[in-house]
Image 1 (cartoon, helix red, strand yellow):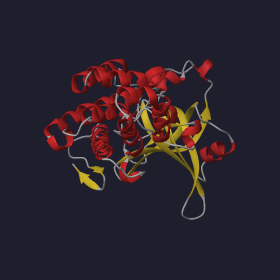
Image 2 (tube, helix red, strand yellow; image 1 turned 90 degrees about the vertical axis):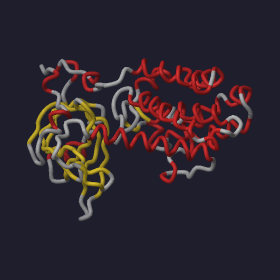
Image 3 (spheres, one colour; image 1 turned 180 degrees about the vertical axis):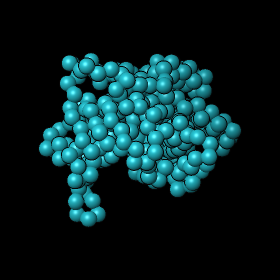
Amino acid sequence: MYSEKDILSMEVIKGMSDGELVSGLMYLKDYTKKPTKNGGFFIDGTSEVKGAIQFKAWGNSVAFSKMDEEDYTDHVVWVNGKVNLFGGAISLIIDDLNAVEAESSGITEADFFYSKYNGKAYMEAIRKSLVKMAGEKALKAFNILIGDIEESFIQEFAAKGHHDNCRSGLVAHTYKVLYIGKVLKMYQNIMNFEGTTDLLYLGCAIHDIGKTVEYKNGSVVGLGRICSHHTFGVEMLMKHKDELISFYDEEFFYRLCAIVEQHHGEFEESPRTFEAYVIHLIDKFESDLQFIDQSLEGFERGSQLTVNGFKLS
């Protein structure tokens, strides 16, 4: 039998040195086989310990052979490996692993999905903020769109890696984007167009709803391997097209679609409206700040942290 003490912890791992040996329980979410520069292969994947962490298994390892021959996705495993520090990022190099039977081990999948967020409280805060900043009509539109995905929206991760990659990360990220959006009131030319207030704040609140389809526990699953959350988000809007147009108008509806489809900016489809571009900027700003915030967990003054190529101390 295992206990929670056997689960690897990001807090502990962040205090370890490069190459230091680790062993313990990990929930292996997903992985892919990728080519190396010299013609070989390695495994690249994501996992949950007490926190989320990336991992690799090199082609000459026992772990690589096992994962290449068998599917360990969505399995609790006991791993032996070492800490890998590269470019300011922390990951694990797995040398060997063995599947653990969850039912007989005393450990379940739920033991790995910690959260620093109260998802329901963040959802309530989103609704209160929408009413305050945009009014009851925007809240009604939000409630229609969130509909039967509310529980997934509260529980899901915001990302596979990088930022708020934990339980309830999606709803927390959404609230922070909406909250940062308050600063838009300082910019009169942005806010003076008819319908802009509802459009921008509602756009902040629903820009990532498609992640409830793209992800499961922060892993890209099912149709998410084919299309991104932008596509699924627009599909959700289309299901309620007539209702949303009755609240606002047709142009408002398609501008809302543009926000959902184009908010990743230069990384995917470029914004075609100023609202999509503004929300792209807010979304990126928040995720960058959250990445820094997460990177500082366990960081000691005098150490060096690399963020976007900048070496910080």
